[in-house]
Image (cartoon, rainbow over the protein chains, first blue to last red):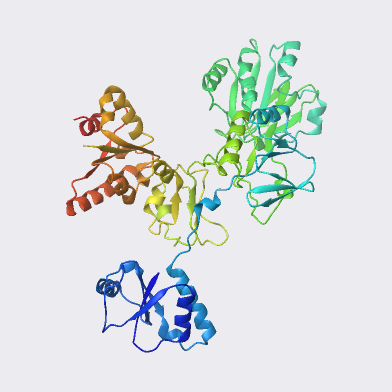
Length: 445
Length: 115
């Protein structure tokens, strides 16, 4: 590598030449009086104090016959009066910044150990699916997991595993707090048992009230609710008090319409507005609520009260399992830009939904060492100047100012539509958008 | 004359597929097809890089009034204008066009693609 030092002809101090030799640069001194054409690959270091304007750099580069990007200025005049040690470090750093270090990309393509840890212990279906894919499975009731390189290590047995699958547990809780007196009436029934109960008793002029919380319970629960439309004979009244009606599934809209035609009343309101009390004869439950449309409270006496439980998936306490210096934040898979099973920690998956798909994803991760994520947007905090061009241009309002330091913008991936407009408009190129680059990269541009 | 196409996943790409069903011979001319989420994210650099390997590049997107991302197509139009101007100034015989189409409105795309 050749370096031309552009400056006065006076003798340079020892640290300049020594460091150049140590970093295996060949160098020569060029002065304004005697200029000559250099090799195109050589760097030009201007030893001066004043910053050069673009025109001056271009003129100098033209005179020396090099690329203007290879001209750099070292503030020599200001530095040379400092102690020698300090000068040496500054000069070293400057020389290193000239040539960016070469990174061997192949060295990062490490494939993890082909073994999977299930935590807590997986069910038979999951184990069978992994066995079919020929991926050995380990699961222990108690252990400590640490990460070295790409592999996790299960202590105290110290077995390396390539990936870790977390199995969430389903937690059910009632949608509203049911008062003791209401439970004492014996008129509170679970949704699963409702058809049997209704079948036993005569339904004439009966009133059934369902309380459905949001986030919506499982689709199976909605299937049961919509099926009630066919159940009540003449005279029965079914009232569904829901925070949100879930129709985003095949056939659900039709079922919803049919249920309404059959006389099932749907009322959308927050369940905090519902108050429950037993009737005087303790045979019914008095439900009082204020609808959203008008301010007058509605009172009805329910023969049967059906609280549909709020079901939430709870992940195992991962922060207690993984001991590492990495930041442990699990993003929940409602995020549409993440793969359904992936978390933001590479190698950690969550067993939601389809088992076969999970096994395919894990197996691909174990082979390639990475999984293809769908269009994640990355923001380079160093480059972001907070000009907020992205904030103004984002059609979905997904750009947010990050909370704590407000040094760079953040992208709310739940709102992001992956259009890439922000990345295209960012003046500092701080936002990189993987979809476009991946699509184009596949074609070996 | 070889043709490259960048189509948005909402309208441009489905429109191209619809046109391809109607007139399968267009595939002989098309050498590059890139589906992207929105034309607004395609910058000048990408356009020029794809243009290295085809003579004409079409950016097919939603009509600006109905663009899903509000101003994706408008942005693309501006960039195409800038690149076209560059190409003309440099006297490079390659061309970039912005075409607005969706599967129900193929006229403009048909006029550009079918000779």
